[in-house]
Length: 78
Image 1: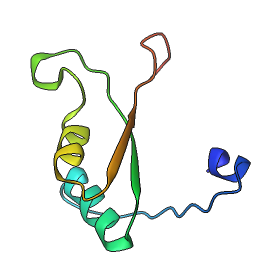
Image 2 (image 1 turned 60 degrees about the vertical axis):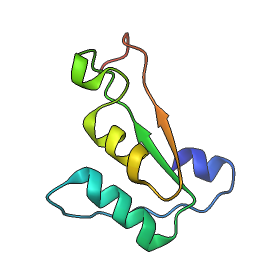
Image 3 (image 1 turned 120 degrees about the horizontal axis):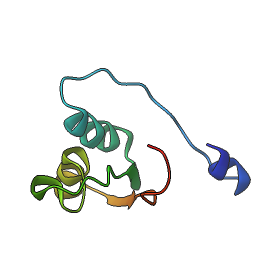
């Protein structure tokens, strides 16, 4: 919100309760007509999640719009 405010951009937050976070992100973005989904990556380093976490992987593969994934450096606390 702070970054959007800094650049005078509109932003809308929404709390959604769902069984699957990944499906909820994709469906909510589609329902709202979003142009971009921004996600933070988990940064896990195991074989199942080499690049992203499971949620980010699902969103990238199923979103109708662009997805921007950001990962914090390992030196930062999670």
